[in-house]
Length: 272
Image (cartoon, rainbow, N blue to C red; front, side, top):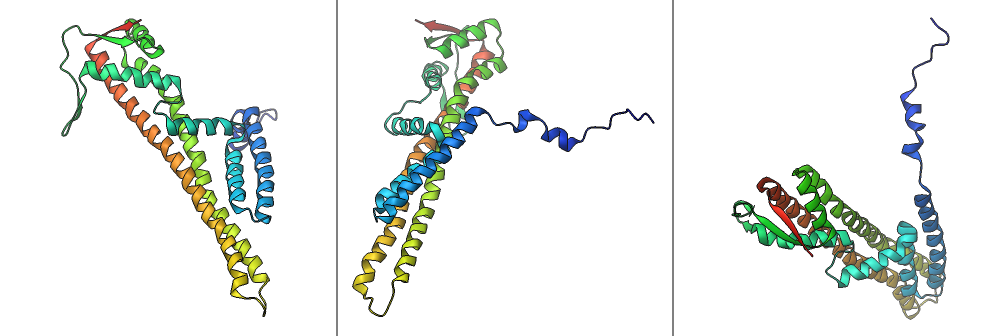
C-alpha cells in the first residue's frame, strides 16, 4: 500500500471548513453588533425610567430597544416604511409599483374576470392582438423579451425580479414587528413581578391597604403598557401582511396574464 496515498477527506471537516457557508459578511456582523449595543444602551435608559416609576416611558424605550436589536442600522428605514405603508396604498419598491401598474391594462385587455366555478377566465381575444402598455421599466422589458424570444419561462423569471425584492421587504418588516409585539407582554409581566416583589418586601404589621394600593397599581401598569405597545406593533405588522398578500395575488395574476400573452403571441406596444 502506498504510504503517500491520501486518505479520503472527512465529510464533516470538509463541510465545516467551507468558509463560504459559515462566514458572516461584514454588513451582517456590523448590524448585529450595532443591534446589541443599541439594545443595551436603550435598555439602560428604560431601566432608569422604570426605577423612577415612569413606566410608560420605560416600556416605550424598551420597545425601541427590541426593534433596534432585530434591525440594527435598518431601524430608521423600518420606521419610515411603517409610516409609509400605514398611510399610503402604494408599494415601497418602485419595481413592485411597476408590476401593479402594468397589471391594470393587462386585466382590461385580456378581459380577466372571476368565475365562481372556474376561477379566473380570459378573453376572448381578437386575431393578431396588440396591447398598449404604459411606459415603465417592466413594459420595456416585456417588449424586449417577447420580441426576441416568446418563451414564458424567460418572461416569468424577469417578472419575478420585480416581485421578490418587495416581497422580502414586507416579509422581514412584518417579522421584526411581530417579534417586538410578542416580546412586549413578557417584559410587561416581568415589570409587574418585579413591582410585586418590591411590594411584598415592604409588608409588615403596620402596612395598610392605602399604602399597598398605589404600589400595586404602579406594578400592574407595566403589564398594561406592554399589552398596549404589543397591540400597536401587531397592528402595524398586519399592514405589512396585508400588503404582502396583495403583491402575491398581483404577481400570480400577472403570471397568468403573461402565459396568455405568450400562448396567444400578443404584440406589445409601449406608449411614450
